[in-house]
Picture 1 (cartoon, rainbow, N blue to C red):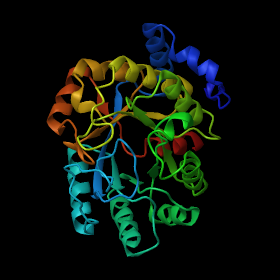
Picture 2 (picture 1 turned 90 degrees about the horizontal axis):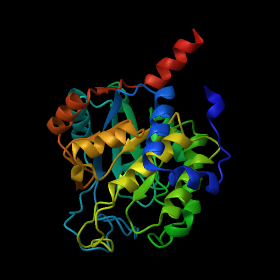
Picture 3 (picture 1 turned 135 degrees about the horizontal axis):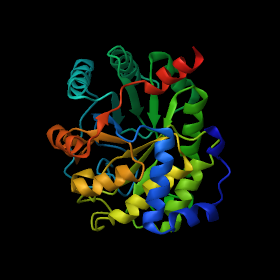
Picture 4 (picture 1 turned 180 degrees about the horizontal axis):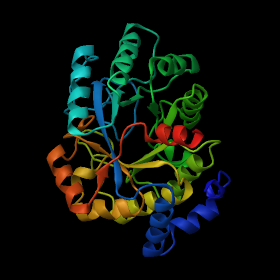
Length: 330
């Protein structure tokens, strides 16, 4: 099974996959998906903004940047009890992974980080996979999160290295890759993907996937986000990206990184059930549920439940990968 896991993909090889006839591409991705995953199974995750707005970064897509005039209100770090309450609600609604996002450029060793550590411990005790996205992270900070029970850390590379500097100037592509290395060295599962629809070319999407697929270890989770244009940001006038571009990106990611969870992330609120079904066919096997994804709209629990019933999908249990590894050792 592991013989088809490669880390030496070239850009030309990835381009050939990405640009192959669409139905052939989706068929190949679906076949790969079925070799490594239960095609009826989708992991449901909940993403909560635990500290909102006021960020010093200049990410052109983000309404939480302090320099942009958006409708996002600055909210300090939430209290522990409120976060645990949210996690319990998410678990009762069917989520098996709870992700906490803080609008920080980087993690600082202070009382706020101490509080996040306690949140990680509390959510881990609920039996949920706990994930954080807190900005740049040192290896010692990653180790503290690991010891607290952090399961995964999200830190997206957003696009290709060539296009990246057109979207963000306050941190480098190398900074992002260093954080990924720090997370990996601490033994934490890596969640890393990008955004489609920022004005990048297909070559940039291919470049992003090349970066991910040639890492020493593939990310266990690859989110594919569709840009949600927000008034007040530099990308406010970007039209919605073609679903076919999203599907090509998902299918290519599935073929390059067969064992990864490919997450259909931001932008689902604008997608029909048929469009999402095509994404699942192309290899997506995770979504974020709940009516808000950090600060942007997202389908509510009821709508997703109806879609799952329609498509015959079921929810993936928490820690399934670990259970499989344990059974294989017995």
